[in-house]
Image 1: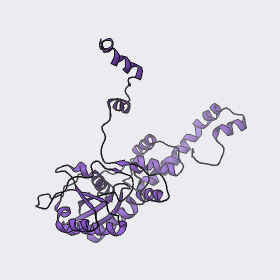
Image 2: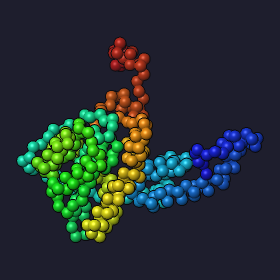
Image 3: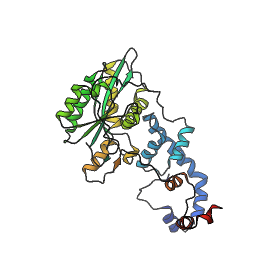
Image 4: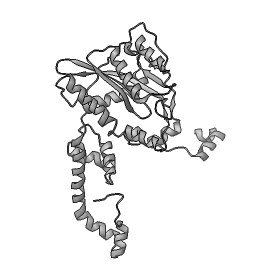
Length: 323
């Protein structure tokens, strides 16, 4: 088995000490060890995949590397496909936003922000969860910088109280300084007077998405997608209390503490915030999607890029390159 970070000799050192060429070693190794190594790797993949049936091959690959395996994501994907261990995907979602109201609508302030710390931008959203005989609703507030859910609430009623309970939990958890921006859609739950007053009382600036544009609140939409695909769609909740307990456990224990995020260099939100507290270097997150240049697009697609000399010739003598 190939592992990384071990204290033993490397293959090169062992071959030199035994006066055996590495080619001879690999010829012998190729006949025996790959089968044993692949069986052990499949066992590790199955253990991780069955522990969380919604975990994709990239995150399982990261977990394997944490355990010491030297393996890339393509091999993990191939083995998971062969063993029928690919993650369970979500079903389509239903829009629950009601923006037909007379309350004041605020401009979008979150579009061009560059985040460098927590408690600079919170996003809020509401989704539904279907039980056997009723619908219930979940409101969440997410810190965009660390992707951590800082407040959530579940209710049978789709009114402003569910959003206010989530905000109350977030304020108790974080106690943010003035200057924080709270971004949401234009739903009546976030535009009503009681909710706006709670934000203004603690000096939080209000921001709302543009009409009919869910991409303005993509961070909250992404969390809802994760919640539905990794928790809700794979369960049949018995009742309201059971759903509340299971969804709360997923948010607090799985999503915040265990789930690895590619945007956080494959750390969980709790690990990422702990790294910041310890003095580790954070990351800079821009909420504006920058347009790539033509050269950058070619590099990304693997196409040949014009050299500096060729570009200079084309600019000086355009007639020489037009034919």
